[in-house]
Picture 1 (spheres, rainbow, N blue to C red):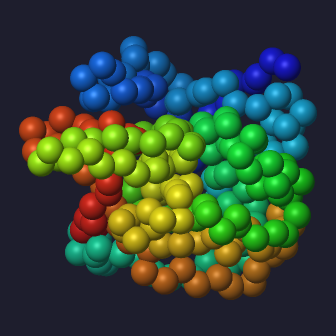
Picture 2: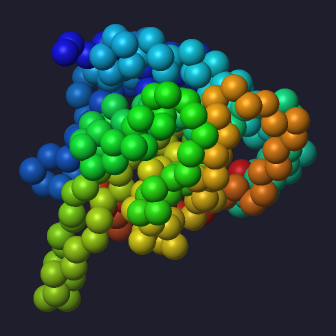
Length: 243
């Protein structure tokens, strides 16, 4: 079935400028293609799934603009490592599904490994996150570090001091200001300075929450190698920042 092109994240959530898609090259560095205008677009879902999930982008756009405003207008700008506050009359179930819909496009084999999660996203019904996966949220203040990628189910091997180490990769990343959103193996969550927001899946897409408190969502940026060269995303770790 042919796939439709979609902006991930939604175009109106600041994904309307120049950008390029990347991947890991033979030297284990991130390599990018030719920059294109009009935002980052990828082959995403079939027409039926896209028609079903795209209306939820409005909530993602609302949250992106709200958090961008918090970052710009706060008297604490440039002095925080985390962001706290409240959102009113929002639909967290719709926000998380808009993000997860993009993540299922980035990590397409999720449909094979976690069909129930994919069905929950597509149907918009209240459910719980699978115990082996976590939806993690951070704040990304710097547009120069924007990146999206998926690599669900992979294993990274690294040689350090004569020992070979391996660990699961991140399933999907939407590190695109103002958010850093991860779908990560549960075993990795302690290594990543993001807040666990998996409980938002317990709301359906139409459920309006009068007030939702977001507490201590960390501000994060990409890690880099000692040489300053970006690391492969499958080996990516994030570090705290101040904003």
